[in-house]
Figure 1 (cartoon, helix red, strand yellow):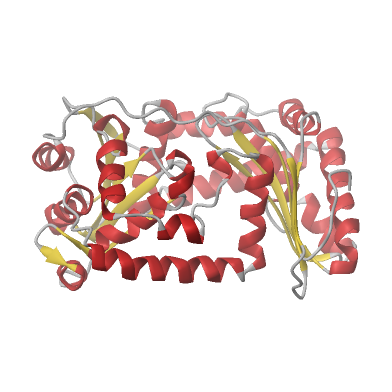
Figure 2 (spheres, helix red, strand yellow):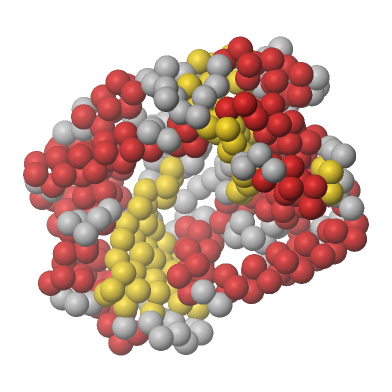
Length: 409
């Protein structure tokens, strides 16, 4: 990795990591703000705004936005999370200025027409209905509600029907103006690209945004709790969550490796014990999700309804056993998986752009490949076990769809 980082006078960060041999470029504007910053009455606003800017921006309507990027064989897209909103594009290197101009138009001069908003609300409501009908999606929303009870971070990114219907064009404009301030923005590029070219585009397209203090983000606290959804599906879907650590916490690499060994692949303890040895579940997995100020470690499963409680208890037993007796071989396997995943990600322009932006959001700078590998390679068995043991000492969140579980399951 050879990333460069620059900060404009207004506070916007520019990050560039050229990829030798590439013919394409990936460019993204990464905003360190998402659904957890929304007011409760407008839950879902961040995601709705992400949709709305594609309905027309700058001098182009919806069709023109789609046609102008596809005329050069490129693509333009976006995503919204609890702590991040990203607008990104891919094209051949020669079309970098076009991609940058389109992204700037989306964020700085969207039309936000009232008629378009009314139509897009229906699209979002359809998406919300689809998620509600998908137990594997629904259970994760229930899990966040249980883990962060009564807090903004616990609400669904998609919002609710009443809160989506309440959004007005002014709310969308106020969201972009108030939340997308330069100090929260990273313009990151990788592929066939030069740092000077990106800097010039950043200055021209974003350098005149006035600097301002971003609104404070409500701190999150893992509370634990229970959410049971009684609707009946073919299988029971459940999740358990435990308090994790924030993204920049020095303990995070050890925790990530522990979770990988616990349930990150088909060789993991959870997969081998629940699926291969017991036949309790078709789908069983674990993941680690750190945020700026907190974190969450979760186990998810789809099992027969009659065996849901049994699969929950066995998963907790496997978690405790792994924290007590994780082996050197298991740690090394998890380490190899994480190293390979990192290196494979950094082989792509999009992966590099995503990585350098997130590195800046978390650490304030671009971590080198040696530093990243050093974090992974520096974890000991004792450190990984300690990270696992810490999960057992805090509160727990339980969520289910199609099964009635208890916190003490």
